[in-house]
Every structure is written in structure tokens, then in C-alpha cells.
Length: 108
Image (cartoon, rainbow, N blue to C red; front, side):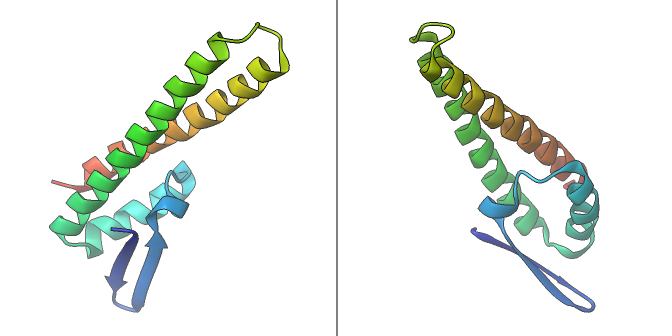
């Protein structure tokens, strides 16, 4: 599932999953009620599976950056770069976890 399609009364909405998620809480508060109302149960389950896979990928990246940063001297350029990437990826991971939690709330 690369594209989430939400068919509603006035048309449809298509979202590229890998580009849109993890989304901010502001966007999620708009999107997840639409998913609850207009998507089938199998679409919700498929989306949950896709988001879980993306979250696992972010978690693996966080571990990789943390381990790589530990191999360099603390204040070196490489360590600072890897730490920066770790923080960015960790933010995306936490955001994805919040998206998964909100999706579970709309999925019975």
C-alpha cells in the first residue's frame, strides 16, 4: 500500500504514505477522523501495518546513528553529524508512534 485513498461524499483524497507520514499532530487531528468515517476496516489495518513497518525502520536508523556516533570521539565533526541525524530520526520515530496510537484509536 503506497497510496491511501479516502473516498468521501465530495470526492476523494489520496495520500502518499511514505511522504505524508509521520505527520504532525495538527494534520493528524484532521486526517484520522476522516479515516475513521470513510475508510474500510481492511484499509485501516493495512495502514496500521504500513505505519508499523515505517516506525520499525526509523527505530533501526536511530540505533544505527547512536552506535555510529559512539564509535567517534565525542566532539568530532562526525559525532556531531551523527548525533544530529539521530535526533532528527528520533523525532520522526516519536511522531510516527503518536500517529500509530491515533490510528489505533479509530480502528476497533
